[in-house]
Length: 186
Image 1 (cartoon, rainbow, N blue to C red):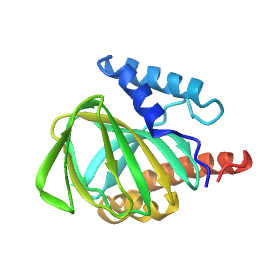
Image 2: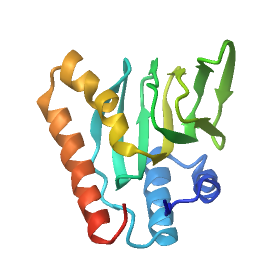
Image 3: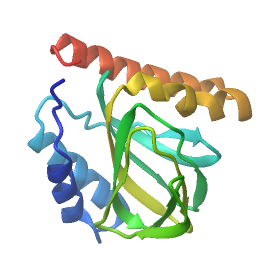
Image 4: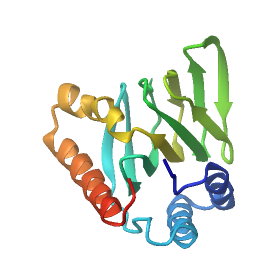
């Protein structure tokens, strides 16, 4: 399966905007990504509440396909939750704040990821995470993206019972996936 995005390149681009005021940082990052990956980045920001594994944040989808997604995710007030177990790998490139993590295979060790750092959740791995104050990241996943939708939508469906969050998430990701398929991208 051919992937469009390169984690090392995404890490380099995300480190370039660290330290900027938040809105400027996000706008500049989206612009840089659109330049680096022409035709594959949604440049309009559509912020959607996201409730996953007990954590609450906001996200904007920059790219969606069956094999990759790229989002900016964050919280202005802090959050914590459970990652879920997926058939894909997830790369988090910290832009602002901290993310505290412990994984299912290392439950006694806390890792702290600061702005400019890169955290990876491997396939079939789990983690607990916390952004103690605010935390913003560029998140990239590769693998079987539809396999993460039950966990990704579970909080909105069963906890918040919020059809608007479900609709916004499914329609935004769905539209981008259709655009990717029309370009020949799986």
